[in-house]
Length: 250
Image (cartoon, rainbow, N blue to C red; front, side):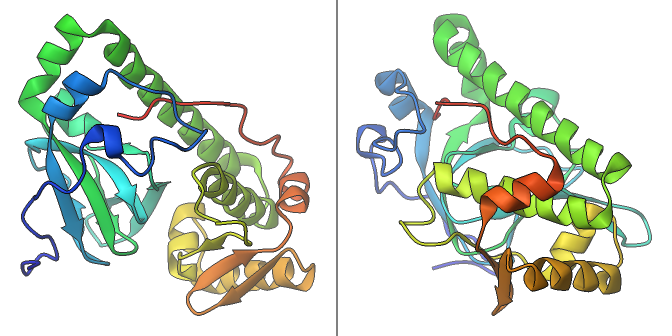
């Protein structure tokens, strides 16, 4: 059963060879024998639970098997900047695993299942499995690319372009890992989270979202966003879209 922090104790449900994400065309195949030994189980996390805390030393890193999460930093007065969102296939906690102390926090946007890996096994991975080491470097580089795009939005895009770019970006990533299931992508992100990602007030964000709804690009209902026309969102944002074909799955 989940504890007070909304996290259960790790248990083993899937071998890496039977991972539900592995058949998806978005992912490359890995060295399964080592990865399966590297993995210590799965961790169920409730919506709203904290996965990682800024300033802590994490003994683990995780791959998202199901669900959504977001990464953020707080100022001393409580103001929050959301840095990025994670979804199935994404690796979280790498910073704490390599640098020691977490420089951001991670919270679950929905119920989640995380694959748990031991931090102390990373040196063996780098020594003995250069292919996997390259994969982790690729993942870190991809995160840097995403942050570049977010910084461009906050620095140069208008509020309408920022919102369109963020929603198109998240929608494109969700579609690549099969979260739409053949239907319009639904993003479970409240408007306050959109505001905290874009650096806008909640009032300004609400007005901006309404403009996107009036253009029939999105619907907003039940605390989340349903994407109607992702291509037009990309055009409005002046964003060319994701350029990757396949990516590593650790």
